[in-house]
Image 1 (cartoon, each protein chain N blue to C red):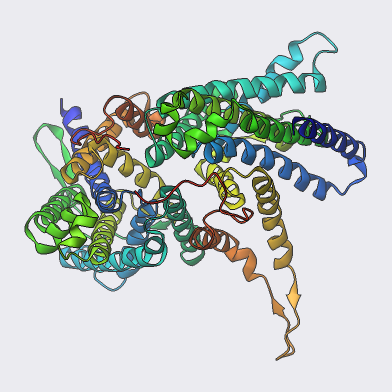
Image 2 (image 1 turned 120 degrees about the horizontal axis):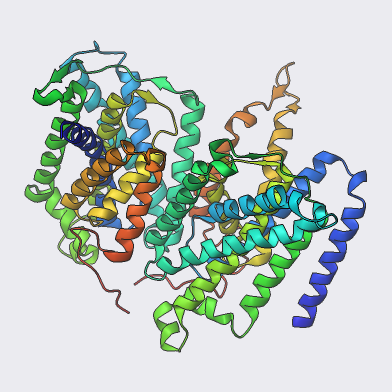
Length: 297
Length: 332
């Protein structure tokens, strides 16, 4: 039982990071209906921004960690907005395939530029936050970085929910997602809303990048590929375009993966996410919380 | 038209036979590049059937290639020594390639069946997932070397086999698409709903496209394995699939001539950039010459930038002159 709870905690803290990345995929899909492949590389840039910013603040301190995290989120928000402006906006209204391939191209561009600028060698990620471990009753161990990951994810998801449901820009986002033409008719500037969505999603990816690196403290320019793909699976699992769904999907995927990792089949961990994806698309293509849309002629 | 394509196939087979006779006199470096070009032509043209003609965006072609490579290498390595004298050796190469193709086709069937419920982005991700799953499975199969891969595959690949299969792939794909039956692929690509209203079964066509495409990818994998002499799961990852997709996009979806040209161009480009990085240009403003070594370091950045710029400027592909009859109508 203790082992089960321990794995559950580990799984939740991994799933929280997947949830943060999945939120970015799902929001962009909600307003633009396309998979932003470059999102996983924004996650990588977030971790590297954290790595370089951490030289400016004292390590092992709560406020230092928060400053680094906010700085990295701002950098990535800017990066996301620039990517959308330069690569995706000129293609708006073109075929889906062209946009998808551009997204793959942007993803490769970020990875290759990352390998050139940051060098391909893995780097150790500094301990930003104070590090202690809590011994709970029953032999459970809870590390401070796991607590920070869980708490910060909760705070960020709550903030996102507030923005989407209770602010003017959030209302505009939902309107664009519902019907872009009708939103434009009532005076919503779609371009601004889409830029804002990219900025918001990229900021969450940056936070995810830093939180991921706290638990797995080695970063390299290709680190985003696998977590990115898995977060996408999480978004589909929860129902793409659905914000609570993405958070739920991330947590489920993280827990399942951690349990598989602790089982004799641990070498198949990387395949589990994709197996879940194929099963969910076969049996419930709209995802756990999504609604099915019928294609109209 | 059919007479002409038969004639072209024969001519291509003859050329590859002649090339094979003179292979020993060619510079081995150029011969290697030629073999790579041939393998990439098979991969790109077979993917063009799935992506270009049928409009099913697949990102798992490297997975099919892996299935073919592992199957055919297992046939020549594990089955070959047990056969009676005279049946092993290079004679076994063709059956091994066909076995690799058949296994890959089976994998294609397995991917094709779920694909009938999915379109666009979802399909891309599912095929990508399948490719990764295939890779993880090979990594866990100790009988084929696990994550270290298979070493010591016999050296059976010759220019004759490579180019014969390249010619055969082009022949099969273009004949298939230009046949009365094969118009169904293009119909599915253009408008699935309209196609099924005309009595075409989109599901059937999608699955056939996946099976045929995967078969040739498997053959290409077999040729690749017997050319590189060692294969490992890492060589067949997502990046390899993207490389093949880029050839199809660059050539123009559903344009076989363009795709072949793009496969040749993209195989030669890295070699050319590598050579260019060794050059130095005379500097008119100073005594030191300008080294081009930076090209070697930024090669991959140039490559990825090229994809983005190409999509922004020429989404129909480099070698498609008109907008083409296969282009999908835009807008709602």
